[in-house]
Length: 311
Image (tube, rainbow, N blue to C red; front, top):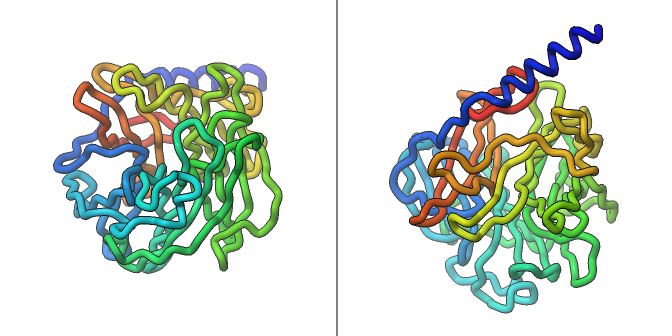
């Protein structure tokens, strides 16, 4: 049994150490930051990303992208207490399509502040001006132990969860009501934390594959162009509410995290990721930097080793 365990571990580590694959081909308008991707009932792809009013791009084939406008063309006055503007830059949206309805969670804050909030919205088309503001989901204030940004929705059967957080004490989880899309209790569960690099961990995504839940996060520093050190890490658990460990068995609550994708070749600082399931399997969506700016990266993921590998 010991030999089998060692062999399995070595196989997993060998798989994770394969040559890094570059982003898949994308064309058109692909200058994005913190992208999330979802697919309409008719099969059209949507990417929403950080920007004034939240930017919207669409594609018929997951390759050629067209800028369509923004979610809030008339501003988002409800976010002003957290941003200082009635038409603010809104951060790190997360899109899920349920039937014919788009659900979009997003953050309002300013850089380095804990005066932060997460809101959500609904639409039947996903297009500019079609969205209904569903209001505040959760918030934090200066001095809180965590930061209410970078939301990600996990729907697991009849259970809804929202992961969130950035720096401070790391990644948290709240349970949502499926009928309201808002917290069903005041409980906040810790999922992952770091002490290295001032606790730089954010952009959480929980993705279920097989019998495991995989917690993806971005480590280190974003938003510095080609000086960015962002990288994508992962741990897994048999439960979405905790117990995440990396491929070496280190708890994510103790700084654990297996590298999925980091700087390589001309691709700098990949992160701000999202995952979706498409006809060809799990898809990783992220941004990366070049000297020309921040761009959309899309890759398939292979979980055959038990751990995600970019392909």
